Amino acid sequence: MNRCFITNKLCSPDESVSGGQIRKTIYDFIKSRYPDFNEKSHLSTEAFNDMRADYVAGLIQNEIGELTDMEKEVVQAIGKNQILSENVEEEEDREATFGERVADRVASFGGSWTFLISFFVVLLAWIALNIWFLQDKGFDPYPFILLNLILSCLAAVQAPVIMMSQNRQADKDRARSEHDYKVNLKAEVEIRLLHEKVDHLLIHEQRKLLEIQQVQIELMQGIQKSIVAAAPAQRLDGSPAAPAASAETKAHPGSTAG
Image 1: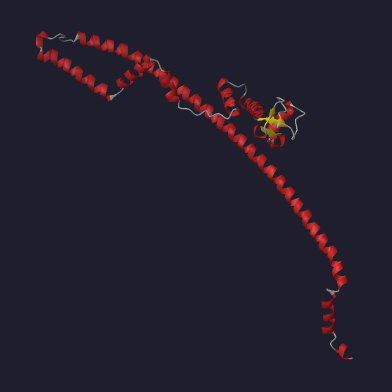
Image 2: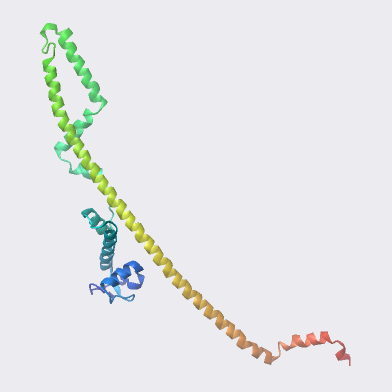
């Protein structure tokens, strides 16, 4: 069990992070708040996520100034590893009132070819019925005062309904824009943190490679010293001298004959 440096609570190794495993930027940030924190200290996962969220908040604040509610939500999502992506359309439709849904339906029908064709068919049928079929007994003879009244009422009702639908569409667009901003901001910060992680891993791996290289050099030096130390013993045994004697024999073949 490891003890969290900040909360002073015991936590299992799977739920804790050592100071040596934390990348340098966040490690320096924690060190600035807790000077006694070192590479052998441990943090619980919850405390580490809180410190990382504070680091991200400071990072964003240095870039764009004071944090808004949206940016605070992004920081909280990064700290808790939450997903911000969601379907804004479904959320807006779920929260829509009955009047807003009716306004959307009316605006959708009023802006379609079905409404336009139906309107002209009813208009022509009204005029034809009152002029040709009913003649002088028509319920709305020329100049069609009743028709003008109905059309005026239709326009007076349809205009605010369409405006209500447009306002709701504007709210949808604004919510979609805010959602895109939050997702893009989170992605940008996550990419920056990912770069820092990669840099931390590269530096950490380079240190390991240098240590391995140093060990290999020491092993090679030890082997070389062993070979050098073994060389005099081989000369005392006389094994290296045999080739030298044969070489002298080949160089002075007549010496044996004398």
